Image (cartoon, each protein chain N blue to C red):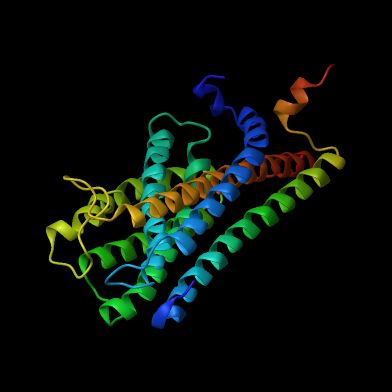
Length: 58
Length: 244
């Protein structure tokens, strides 16, 4: 694959695409882990949502 | 499951758990096909040379930047008219993804423009209207972050989103309404595409891959936002229990 005289521009464009997509994936993945951890801490400390509490047997 | 059932965040979370692995696999497969076509099969353009390869990233990014705003506009109607419980979750989580694709559109366009037009940037109607959309994405993200109550933030953002939707036809038809350096529509136009099949097929392959990526990221981000709102509710209940 030859990219010709403008290879730097093509590589910069594809490099930016990889960086942006990787950034989005990392942000969403780290955010998911953070929210799961926070919910885990809250549930472990006995906090329940009202809708979840209503589902539990009396 | 009826579509209306997805209004329930718990059902949406269950559905997301089921479909995300399939979407991830489909996205990886689509990118393998798309990049293979774009980098190894598509020929160089007779005028642009190898820089035509930038179009395989630039054009899908541009489409998705606009598609994402259109999706947020539908969600904004859901927030303002039907008070759909997932509408502002969908809009809020789409904004950073749309901003990222719009940035990518502007950056890759600039990388194509320097060798082809002789300049990174020109204030023509198409480029400027896309830049306006990018700035409005940043404004929306700032608005959501500056209002603590998600419901209030969602309503304010919905109004701004609908106002910003006026920009979508301006972007689309800017190349027809004004004399621009940016070329007129060449893929979706009356009379058919002006692009050769050898370039058009890889372009559509990459567009499908980018669209699958967008859907995957959006569903995953919506799942995160639902979990964040659950945690917020639980923190408020904990605070009120401690206060009372």
